[in-house]
Image (cartoon, rainbow, N blue to C red; front, top):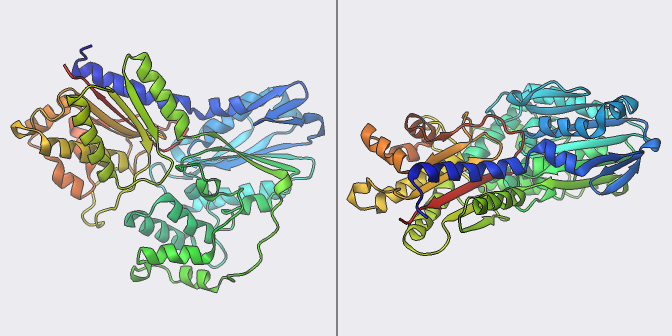
Length: 459
């Protein structure tokens, strides 16, 4: 079956969009929160609503608005009123919208993935809410990717500016999400189970949309309702791994971590009244993308990473090699993968604009150009490759990711452009923007890492 370039591009985008649609946050919540008479089915556990005085909904994450909307839809107006449902959710500014009972708070600007004073103020409101509850109350916590930056509560002696410095430094040095959150938890009053320990409700159920490979609960949004298994020594080890002491960072971080009692007893964990449930993750998204590929008539293979990945450049090179092989040999015509690579950033004075998905696609394009004959002018003939963040946000840009095909290659040559210098300075956005290679979705109100789609035509 022959597919022209325009059809390949449309199909790749449709397959990727199916992955995002499958993890829509409001839909996932409604699948796990249903009311029948006086019974509330909350993620498989039935709760007698007649024994619940009040329901409070709190949380943080890029999917927070959609999740909160899903809660309101599932409960319905009568129950919202009868149980005096209130709540507070911290989200990025471009995700804010007004809901009936739950307040949605702009805890950081769009595209700025670090803690802010607005986030601190919102977290204070959340803690006040959960500390006001009684044993007859139910607390529903909604957690999704991005929650670490959106739920800041610096530990005593640690300033917000110090946490911002650490976040910027580790992100720029190429630290992965587990390393970042190991440090964040030790410098916070709310992460690492702090929210759960503060909550005084009789029951606390956390619904989680996972953006961490393998779904380790303690690292998703730094685990505000999960026991902390890391220590100050673990955080110091991460900082030493990236030579953080040589950087111009706030000394209060080392002072705080080094003075922490290594064997200090932690508060007893109230396991009987706390439950954490993952309701959506990368595997759900990749499975949906595979189903879409099948509907479109492709033979396909798919894989959702469960372990930490390498760099965006290395993953891009691997996909470029797969594209070349799939183009030449019989077998699948579509490859779907999911994961979350890291990017080691160029120095600030050289750095451009982009994100890991854009960097990955640019690295793949660069490899295809270098290995193609005829000066690379037909490097992507019969090939379309895209990578996009399911949250609609790729780095500090307004794009979800990027897509490359032969038409983009033609425009690149006509414009006299080359990927290599853009790659070195992490400037993929400014490469793809004039070539119409960016994927724009706006906030998707979900977040389960990244999905990549490669499709080929062998004719």
